[in-house]
View 1 (cartoon, rainbow, N blue to C red):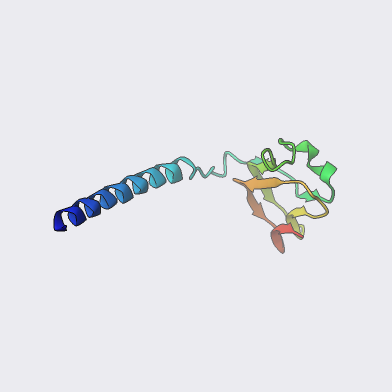
View 2: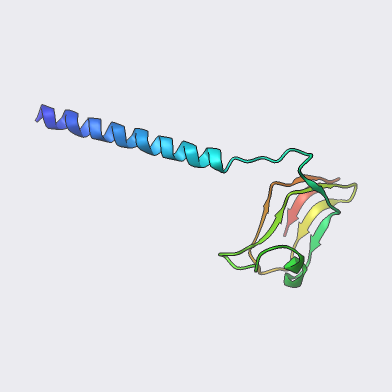
Length: 107
């Protein structure tokens, strides 16, 4: 009985170790952060309807959301990115947003 317990603990330990390695490699692959020189200067973005997203890549579905990415939005306006009145799926990633009150405002 003691031998079975040791073998089970050994198998669990190896499994947990293998899972930890896999999780770390996924995090390292997805942990890309652009530096400020790679970001494209952009005016504030205001989305007030579904059609406003059409200038961004994607189709607005759960599988293919619109993507706002790679922008440096530095403004004295109240908001850098403002999104309201839409039913579409979207993702904002790898952006630097600096505005007077709200960098990103979704309501």
